[in-house]
Length: 188
Image 1 (cartoon, rainbow, N blue to C red):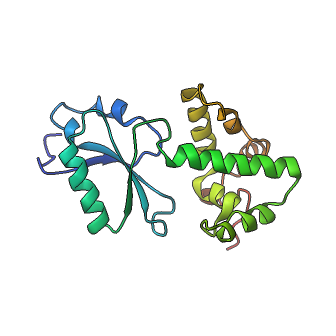
Image 2: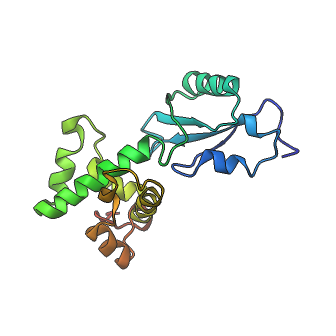
């Protein structure tokens, strides 16, 4: 804290931890400059970013950081509320889990689902299962469990209950790209 300049933005790249709660660990004078910056995965290809102020963030800081991220970093910034999963993980995880759940129920192949849920419907070419491997099945599982525990009032929250295929793959240690195997196996 003593080395942070007074004009420095202070952010966390969390995709789901509460910004308000993280801010409480900071010295009082740094809290007005603290925000969440959730870069979409993989950030080198996806330009979307959620900017999440907490209750004590200075609104002028939020405006300056938003402008900087758009003009200097080349991001498309969405201002999000400090709610469980923000916008992306609340909707994105629900979407991934729902697609996988339907695929399991209808016995659809990984390739069939990714062909349908990629560019065909205007989404990134990764599709559902490939994106799950990029995110990491262990990370995805943690996000789902976190949202389940924090959003009990959500009528559609049961979609985020652990998926059979995720449980099986995690049990094998096949947690996605970081180990070279998930729904897909990385060929070198």
